[in-house]
Length: 529
Image 1 (cartoon, rainbow, N blue to C red):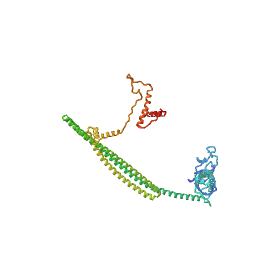
Image 2 (image 1 turned 60 degrees about the vertical axis):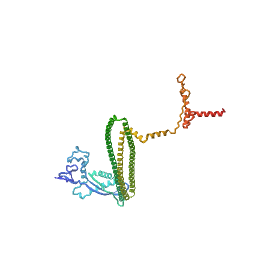
Image 3 (image 1 turned 135 degrees about the vertical axis):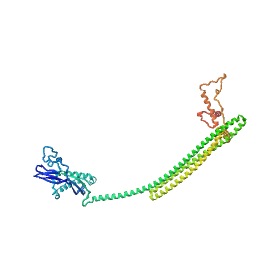
Image 4 (image 1 turned 90 degrees about the horizontal axis):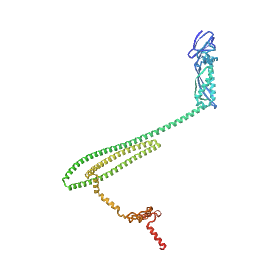
C-alpha cells in the first residue's frame, strides 16, 4: 500500500480491486490488488506539410500546426469528483451507462495513455493524431476552391478545427490551437510563385505611380500656395490703402463739418450782436425821426435799400457759382475714385489669370512671373494709394477754401438782408440791379409779337339772346338744344379750317358753310340756272 501524488501536468489512472473501470485522480491510496499509472496531459504540437488537391485539381502543400492534448475540462459524469463505490441506481448523468461515463480523461487513459517512462519511446499517439488531421484536412480542401481558401481563410480554419475536433472527441483529445501557415507550391507547380510575382509587380508599379502623383500634387500645391500667398498679400495691401484713404476722407469731412459748425455758430453770434446793435440804432433812429424831417428819413432809407440790394444780389450770384463749382468738384472726385477702383480690380484680375496660365505651363516660369506680377501690383497699389491721398488732400483744401468763401458771402448777404428789411427786399434790389424786370417785359413782348389772332363770333339761330315783346325770354321746345348743337358745328369747322388749315371729315361733322355755298353754285351752273 502506498500513497501516490501526480505532478501538476499529470493525472493518476487507478485500476483494480473495488474500482469498476478506471479512477482518474490527482492523488490516491494504492491498495494491494490495485495498479496506478501516471500519464501526462501536456498538449503537443503536430506539424505537417500536407499535399492536398483543391476542387479545381490544383495540387499544393498546406503547412499546418495543431496543438492537441487531453481535454481536462470535459469530465462528463465524473465532473463532481471520483466515486470509488458507485451506486448504479443513484446520481447518474446522461453518460452514466457508458463505459467511460463521458469523461475525456478516462477515454484518453483507456485508449491512448502511456506511462511516463514509455512516453518518449512510442509514436503510437502521434501516428493516430496525424492520421486524423491529414484525412480531415484533405477531405475539406478537396471540397473548396483555391479562391475560397484564400478569401475565406478564417472560415477554412474554423471548419478544419471543427472537423478534427469531432474526430478527436472519442479519444478524449482537444484541439487547443490550429494554425494554417502560408500555402506553398507542390513539386512541379508555380501557381503561388506566379501569383506572388504578379502581386509584387503590381504593388511596385502602383507604388511608383503613387509616388509620382504625390510629387506632382506636392509641386503643384506648393506653387499654388506661393501664388495665392503673394496674391493675398497684394490684395490686403491694396485694401488697406483704400481703407486708409477712406478714413482720411472721412476725417477730412468731419473736420470740414466741424469748421462749418464753428462758422455757423460764429455767424449766429455775430448776427445776434448785429441784431442787438441794429435794434439799438433803430430805436435811436426812431427817436431821431420824431425830431427830424420826413424827407431826411426817407432819403436815408432809400440810400440804405440801394446798398443792401446790391450786396444781396452779389451774394446770391456768388453762392450759386460756388454751389455749381462744388458739385462739379465732387462729381469729378467721385468719377476719379471709381475709375481708379476699376483700374485696380482689372489689374488684379489680369495678374491672377496670367499667374494661373503660367502655373499650368511651367512651374519655374510661373514662380518668377507671379513674383514679378505681385511686386508690380504692390508697387501700383502703393502709387495709387499715394496719389489718392494727395488728391483727397488737395480736394479737401479746395473745398475748405470754397466753404470759407461761401460762408463769408453768406454773412455779407445776411447783413444786406437785415439792412433791406428781409430777403424779399434784397431780392427786389437784385432784380432791379440785374435788370430782371426789363428782361421779363422784353420776353413777354417777344412772345406775343407777330401774332394775328382770328376771332369768330356766331350764334345758333334767331332764338339766341332774343326776348319777347313783353320783356320775357322766348321759350324753346324740347329739340332746341339738339338743334343748336348741330347749328354750332358748321361755323366751328369753318373757324378751325381758317385758323389751322385742318378740314374735318364731312361724314362726322357735316359740311362747312363755304363748301355748301360753293357746291350750290356748281349745281346751279350744271342745271343751267
